[in-house]
Image: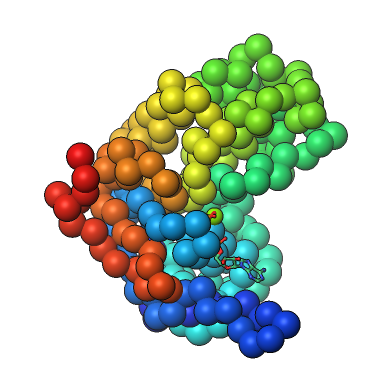
Length: 227
Ligand SMILES: Nc1ncnc2c1ncn2[C@@H]1O[C@H](COP(=O)(O)OP(=O)(O)OP(=O)(O)O)[C@@H](O)[C@H]1O
Ligand SMILES: [Mg+2]
């Protein structure tokens, strides 16, 4: 599903460059669940952005389903994201002029699905927002906005789900419901899940845990985790 080869990413600063990822390698099989952990600023979001093809690495390559992202043009990348990838960003990027229902239906409408509003409604119910479908983002709490963003990422049943701290704004119980939903989709439809989290208990629920440290990605032995 995913193959990262010697991935390197740096950002230009006023004085010099900031190296964020240096020679990251990773292979992820179809239907795997992988947690990415690491301290704030270690490059977790950067890694997801590269995986989604939203930016190109300085060096190295990202292959999804056998296709090298740097060989695809903008249109092909957009098609790939629309058809096969669901992304939950740390900041939610909801469209302020659309209701919760409109935001969740959007990816389906772009793809030309006939039943987009019914499917969006059903997904909003699964994230516990049946009573908020007609609210605009500004009329939703932070956790509700996060759940709308999650519903939007899941509504087209993507083969690859990239989730950046999807429970960061949620109380324990709502967070558990959302995490259960992500794992249920993985179990039911075999979607691959890449989950960035600071929560070691959530990380342990994934089949694999990889840790970013000083630009490198290190696979964890889950037994070494503190209980
Ligand atoms: N566009 C940019 N220009 C310069 N530096 C950047 C840019 N984007 C990110 N960085 C820096 O790169 C480093 C990695 O950022 P990233 O967002 O990937 O961290 P993270 O692991 O997701 O952290 P967090 O857990 O806080 O979300 C950070 O130190 C950040 O300040
Ligand atoms: Mg981040």
